[in-house]
Image: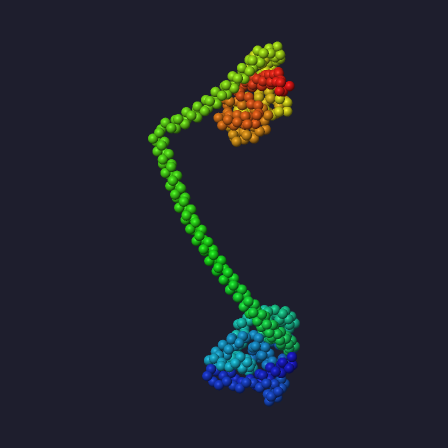
Length: 455
């Protein structure tokens, strides 16, 4: 640290005056070891004696830049003022531009700031304006110990320049604190220099990496350009294909419109066509009704033949059940024959809502499970297929179901060989007759003699 101070004193003792624009520059200062060594030693010996004054005897006025010792001017001007700002302020004071190198400008500014002058005042105001916040923070400190603690904390941060100026110009900065501050700033400058060299190495490495990345970026951009060109070509192909499809759709719509116009013309020229379709639909429904009646007649004929062939084997008529009741005749009740339906599923398709509970009691009284579908009035017709698949016996109320439901029931029972009973009127007596017909059919099958092939 002593050698550093001696170098600064030697440099500032031999510094030339800064020449304004247009004048010839002064010679450079002499290096250590030349004839300026004696003058540097004399300057060191002539240090201001007021720095040794105790802190409690110092006043409350901040020190000016020209009141600082010469060894403090070098770090203050070098660390606190950027070269561009220093050159601008010195040029303004000289009324032109300082045509000297950076080192000569630095040494000349130190020489001019040893005493009060225009350059010193301009630089002092620049330092106060630039570091006004640090000066205000330091002005709240009333003792040297507080100022030292604040400096130590500030010197560890990045804003060390403002803390340096605020500390050295503070009225409570004594000689001991001043030496500590100069020692700290000296080491900080060394660290900054080493970090600057490391930064240069990093910059070189980053420059090389940047070149590599730039080359890779160029290749990526080339690939991207190729992909974009391929995408544009594909888009053009898709647009052409879209135009073709639109033309085909327009042609198809035109043809459909022509066919629709022709159909409308036919409907207009033949008004009886719709009536013929209605009559055909009614004819189909009548045929279905006739087929149903034929099946009913066949069942009655079979029952009559069975009654004529074996009158003695018929079971005695069962008495009417008042609990099962309803407005039924005694003859209809006597014709009821129990049918073995244990563990079977009986599906009733159609029927009125009032007769469904009666059907349920009759079916469940025979040990069977009762299923119901209204034939398309409220229940969806599409659900009928699943319900038919789960049934073992189907009772179809032909007068209370839709035409679609009737054909679905008939087709399903025919395809799967499932027993199906068609009932004309949705009543209790109709269901009893249907069950009796089923019982008679089962009995006649049981009484038929076996054929020679079966025996």
